[in-house]
Structure formats: structure tokens, C-alpha cells
Length: 197
Image (cartoon, rainbow, N blue to C red; front, side, top):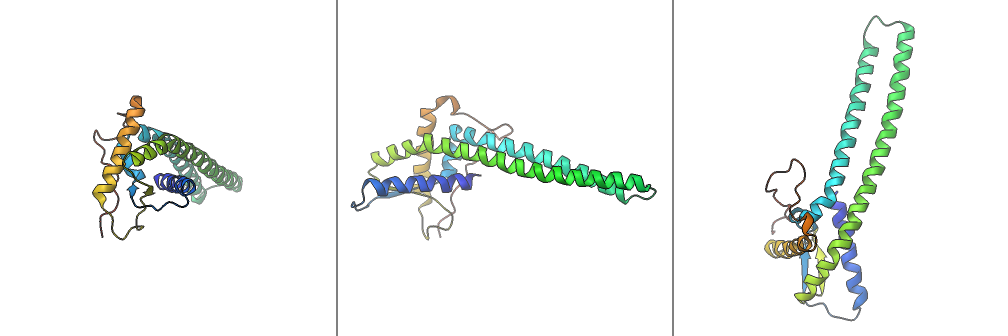
């Protein structure tokens, strides 16, 4: 989920900078970890919490459907069933398989819609703040961190820039600043970019 948010966000960051100053020489850039921003900002965590809850709900429903199917298959293998009983179980198994396939398709579509909504909200709420921080620091380009993209990266600088953005996001949306997902530990560690190579 967060990986797709990262990819969407990185494309949004790159395009406007090139369009605004096609002849400018970029002499200063920063790297942002979207996962760090999401991990440190209560507002961003809240955006994606609904997606995670929805995914878990669908997973539980799919597991229940799978257990029901498995139970029917075990009944079919039991000895002593009449032909009518076997026919009935086989029909129930086919119906459960069709229902299960439809449920998987519905789950995928609904979770993808929720992810897209969260990604759109992330861009709407966070991109202006990234631009603001970059402008204050004289940064011409902000690259979104992606594992394996950089041969050498200063992790402290990535985390510092990302945390500054997260702090300002929560300052702009103070009602969500302390948001913790239900069942989350009191101090959830933020996802960090891979270490230096």
C-alpha cells in the first residue's frame, strides 16, 4: 500500500519542477522518504489507516469463505454419503467457489479505490508542504526515496527532511497529529530508508 503511495507521490514531485524551470540548473536537491512521512505524521497515518482496516476486513471475510469451502470439501470426502447428498455438496462447493472468486474481485476493487483515495489525499495535503520546505531551504528538486535507487545516501538527511515535512503536516492538521491506529503500540517506529552502502 505504502509503496504505491510512494510511486504516485514521486511522479507528482518530479513533473512540476521540470515544467516550471526547464532551463534552470539544479544545484541543490533533497530526498524524501514517503514512508517516513507517513510513519511520523498522525494525519498521514490516519489517511492510510482506513485502507488497512478495509484490507483486514476483506481478508477475514475471505478466510471465513475459504474455511466454509474447506469444510464442505471434507464433508464430500466423508464416507456414507448418498448420491443425492454428494450432488448437493458438489453444488454447494461450486457455489462457494464462485462466491469466493467474486468476493476476491470485489475486495481488490474496493481496496484499490481506498488506496487511490488515500494517495490523492496524500498528494493534496503533503505536496504543498514539501514545496514550502524545499523553497525555504533553497532546494530545486526533491526526489522520493526508493530502495536501491541511490548507491550512496545520507540517511540522516533523508530522515531529517522527511520528519520536517511530517511535523509541518501535523501542524497544518492538528486534529490528526496524535493519531494512532487502533492496536498500534504507543510509540510506533517509523519505517526507515535502507542504510548507506
